[in-house]
Length: 511
Image (cartoon, rainbow, N blue to C red; front, side):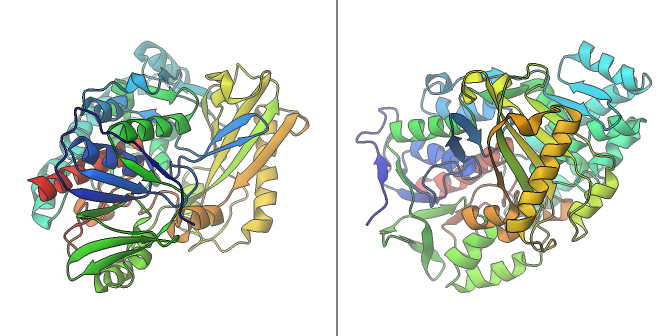
């Protein structure tokens, strides 16, 4: 039996058909953003998604009246999303409402120290001064540095494909001038004296799978990105933003096929010719793009081609980002004092990062990203109740060999105990519903290599040209979009990859 197909009968009048066709494998943020761009350019596009709902990592569960987003939950640079609607003369507000989140994050250390991070300069300077007055001036200098790398690394290069080494050499002088070889933590430490503040201004790379001690200082651009664009929440959850993208794509005449995993991309010589799914569906396309995990794309989808086998072997030698352990829980009661985003730092920083990125151990301590969407959007929970998730970075399954069936129960209790100790003393008595998501689930549900949550680790030697290319080097009508290609993970990253990849595909298909 074929999977359900969602489609529109008529494309938007603002789209002029070109007679060309494309398939996008995977309906994550990157895949949908690419599909919208292609459909807006008149290329008849079909998105094929293996799961029963679109979204990829931005999946959603509804349990006992609670809405639990799988993630991502931090929306920055809303302009990159609004552009997807503007391409065809539409307004994103037709389909989704974004509301600002303030503070962006509240940080808490084990000794009780609190720090509210936002783009309100006066408040932010006050927060810095409470911890170390001397670092106010240092932060201002750091922000100047952040603005410089934002211009070089995001504005100029974030949406541009790196298809040959010459393009990397061309970008190298500007990146070298910004000391891109240094780590984010190293660069923050150059400007900031206090250790807590060094953690406060370097943790952001963890949200895209990067170790602050190793990830290129170019990623300091996140501070400028957040300062200018803010941090936002999609009303109804990240899942509603995904639904809005699907609505808009269908409005333009695109087709979404759900619950039917792609099993093979057929090739002939240096061309991708046909896409085949589990249900037996087969269709020929002029071009194919994969938003699936990069290893899965080559090892499995292209596994019967020489190129697929060769590049999968090359990928197996690369460094992949860690995985995540996530506890979703709904509680009785409301907590207006717990903001939308919190980071509960553990007693260690560098040592913990070494355990996650280097060692094959599950540490006794951890840092927690706590997401509390119902404080911003009460509809995410039943009346008088609250929706949360707690996220803990853990090593991927290639480094950490544990039985997640058993360990998941133990780690879930430890995470909830820590939240109880630091924020909600009677948390266990208030739980209405709960479940957890492990590295094994990332591997099973998302075909994520070794359960990695963010694909290739974002180190300098795996960035730009050194990352998966937006257009394959051998199969000339096979393309990549999403975290495994340039520029990398995170909503702005994968939406940026869609812009880079769409530019290539439109040029290749319609000139």
